[in-house]
Image (cartoon, rainbow, N blue to C red; front, top):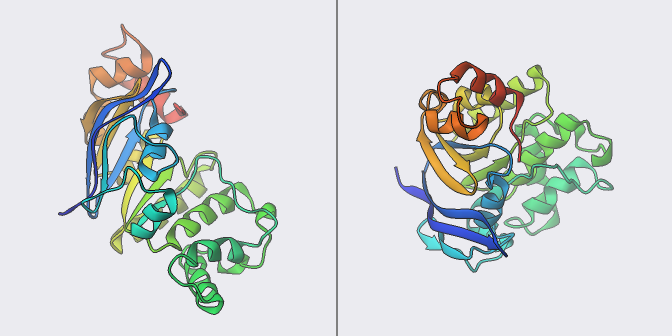
Amino acid sequence: MNEILGVHKVSKQFGGLRAVDNVSLSVKQGEIVSIIGPNGAGKTTFFNLLTGQIAPTEGEVRLKGQPINTLPPHARARLGMGRTFQIAKPLIALNALENVMIGAFLHDAPLAAARDKAMAVLERVGMAHLAARRAGDLTLSERRRLEVARALAIQPQIVLLDEVMAGLNQSEVGHEIELLRSLHAEGLTFLIIEHNLKVVRAFSDRVVVLDRGGLIAEGTADEILSSPVVIEAYLGSGHAGSGREFTKHAMQGARQ
């Protein structure tokens, strides 16, 4: 598999705080990679470095082999990087179709073409019946799916999902996992921040663990669940053997 996203020794310093510390990561075309970590681990800051909301202090980010450190978010989107945010922030005065059309304009500039593209994306994510509904009137689960639709509208090759299932009930989580699996089967690559290891286990090829800004472990979900280093990061020293306690803690959610 070809590398679609490459991160080489990336760090971010905020005054005396090193929020991301010398992280390297490679995501191959067609992978689903999940990022987990305790509170304050640097997960969302790391995403912001990848998508251009902030610039790294050190290191390099490459998308499809091209250095993108100096590119703004819209240029990274044009290259094929989609993203959702931890707190869904649709344009609440616009309807669902209009929200998705904003992303569609990136590659489909004519109004009619953008509308057709956006409608097709809403159909794909099961929201066509909500196209005319004002975004401010959508439920939490509908808003989160609208976030995914907006990311898909830019025709991405890799999508970064920031806790897209947070706050959803078990049934809603199941529907989201189904959607992600089907999108993955169509060729999409995913890098996902997720706090629920039950969810992570359901679809991840690899799991990466951040703690205090640094990458401390990488492997399958089962390997991560049994890692003393990871358990200690979540629960503190003296809990290295408490795999069951760690699983319970992580499934309850360790959010940034």
